[in-house]
Image (cartoon, rainbow, N blue to C red; front, side):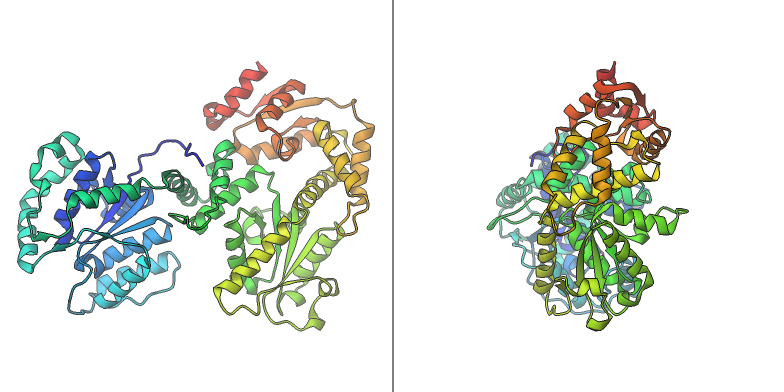
Length: 572
């Protein structure tokens, strides 16, 4: 895919290293890379005086496209370098290991209490398993485990203790010059960085830089997009996951395409979408699709861990899920919100366990889904007596998670779920969309404002005709009634109002649209009026042309929106 996100101030790479052996090598690498147009994050240069260094380091890792790990004794036994490597892996960054001095002998030592606490705090903060890092050997082993089978770039050097001491003595008076390394002209003038000064170089720096640049420039579209989406997702997370910080429009669609990029062997993904990035893209899709989802999750709260695992795995494939603890607004009618969540989902996944089969809540959710002919997908997540399983589920083929003995078994179950979701996807999606519309129409005493018009009506008629003899999850009488009433009113209903708004104001726009419809006004609202697969911009302009009034939701984001500007210009 082509990288089209807005330009950011991202660095090509973040350099993680131990100063004792690697400071001079990193300074030379940083200089060569910057002069070659590949600016990298180097703590001596990029942490301003007086700033919180930990915050700067975290931001440096987050905003850099790659993580460069210079492997030498101090780096591989430092809890601080390990935290940097852990964070890079947590963020799904491409890790590029550079072998300066991988083979070395060092005495195993217990980490200071403060250093051990650094590791404990990191794992606790990110809710990760505690790796029990207590000694330098623990740091070394964990570092190698995180680097894994990633191929190294060799930049080998021989350094004695005396060489390291001389390096430290050189660095002290040079301290005030590091800030100048942001200046290209200064870097060109410091010719003493062209040659090694401490120890002996085994691999020529020119070759190291050439190979490193080749890696940094490989698959840049995918890697740079990863950084940009991650930056947006972290901002969303730091702002209470508010909807105004979700991706919208073309950027949202591009992010979804990026998430679904396939790498066929021998190609490999250079970096990985994190759970946060997947959640962010799925929430953006949910927000764009009128809060409708692929799946309603029916489960007992005691089974939350397996629920979370399945949701996270499905989010990697851009599948949206509805759960009571994430999707019910504070102060909303709980029971009705559950019902709407079921009505607005393509499928209901029933997590079968000894807890769920005796849950009144789960039974009510299942009954509501059956009332509206929803597709039910049972997932057996714990051994459960067949006699306790609801009768309606016993005859259904379920996905069995209880026989999993390894990750491959679990992955196979997720593949089975994805295959189920692909089967007749368009039918179930249209079933959901039309049902939601029909329920609104019925609830509002059959007001004409809720009837189907234009392409939506024609598509609904085609869907109903093709589904007429369907045995599994057929259309409801309510579907038929909505389409029949809409056909009877064909040509009599115009569009009173076209709603133009910034997609970041989607929550307000949805509420406004419903209020106008309840008042008897026919509206053109993109989340309801654009058929799946239609040309978005063409449909927008058609909607404006057909409407009697153009209603612009004024906000700072709307004023800055290029989409709103085009809509206003077309209306004018």
